Image (cartoon, rainbow, N blue to C red; front, side, top):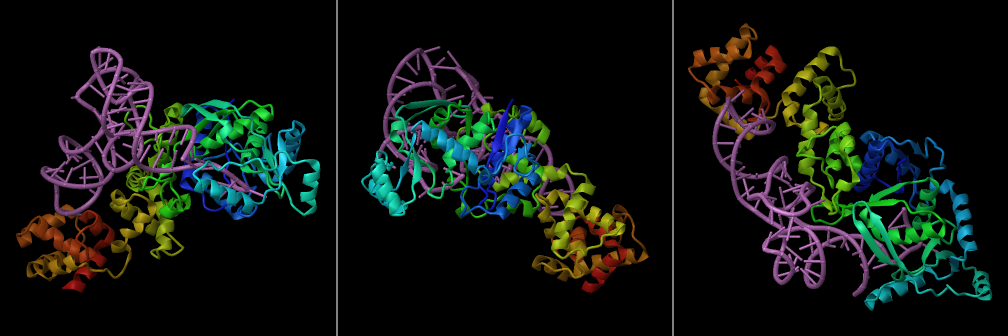
Length: 474
RNA sequence: GUCCCCGUAGACUAGCGGUUAGGUCACCACCCUUUCAAGGUGGUUGCACGGGUCCGAAUCCCGUCGGGGACGCCA
């Protein structure tokens, strides 16, 4: 039985790289009829917030990644929030203590920082030097009396640690190069390397799927598994997602949180599709895939080893493809919040208005890559006053243009013919054709030289509005 | 600095010893067309480098270079 987890630390926005990690865990679970667990790693009291937990859960839900066990819904291996598991960590500390595998360290953060700095300066490997490893009881007592609160360090046994990683194949580390690391802070809180291992053991995690940045933590964790008499799970380290400069996506790349894409109105299915394709590819040459297709084909063995650059252009292309496959009703519903937000719509939308919106969306849908794009195309339909582009003004200023518009006005005064009939009538009365008639109409009705097909524009605006816009110019 | 990982066009990837190195985004051209978009057709751009092994290397081995990660009382 496959059991995987996504274990974010709730310290702010949910990063797109973490979302990808969550997605791959979820895909692996769903593919194998396994269990997907959401665990909150909030032992960093200074940075963890409740608000950030809400961001994590709402973002995952938005993407459609549901969890089977988690801090908010329980499960047989809870609690699923690390600050609620402190007793468990204490027990495990006790276990290591009984085996004489840990010791108190009284070095201050400043001292350690200084030593690290000097080591780096001397071009040596910064590594805890074991100052406190062999402190006598008396020495410890003295330090305690001075009010020093110790951290707990794990004693590294020098050995070659080998493990197999589904993505990386065989990986090997020499633990002699690793210093004794901290498993509990002076305030008693467990550190990441310790709490993950304890939780993953107790939650019976079978596969650890996480970012590449954790690869070099793995030997430490394997040592802890062994110390706690547990068998290490199977690892799969995912390549990083990078920005244009090829360094892992971080704050300095600007927008890196999923919130940005949610707000933009990127379809969840589109982001899901795009993220799945970052470091993974299905059999064959398909690019646009549904959730079910991705689940069906997903395997960790096919995950790429090399980092991937996040490409907004391709996301947009995938987005427009998913928008194409939406029904017009769905598309219209999804556009409404963005139209309201931009001030195009009031709260109440009756059936007439909804139908008009449907027509508008049908006219502009080939231009959309995400839902917030709608606001760039609807002004010509929903605004009373239209803005004229310079090129449009130039065209409208021409004499031959006025002739066309006058003829058009005459036709429209009699009624609203079918578009094709209208155009052939115009051709007859003016003797013009092609661009010569179409451009003036487009310019007078929209103020722009580009836009949706003309027949949509006439139909949506209707007789009265068309007449009044022509009159404004003549 | 040490250790670990990675290296197919501008970007994402397919490729597991014999391929004219395939697909997608972007870009360019043409077609379609009332404009733009969409759609269609075609095109430019790539195996980081140097050595081996082999009849034969993008693919296996070694080295170099380049990028990244870890070396935290962050996760």
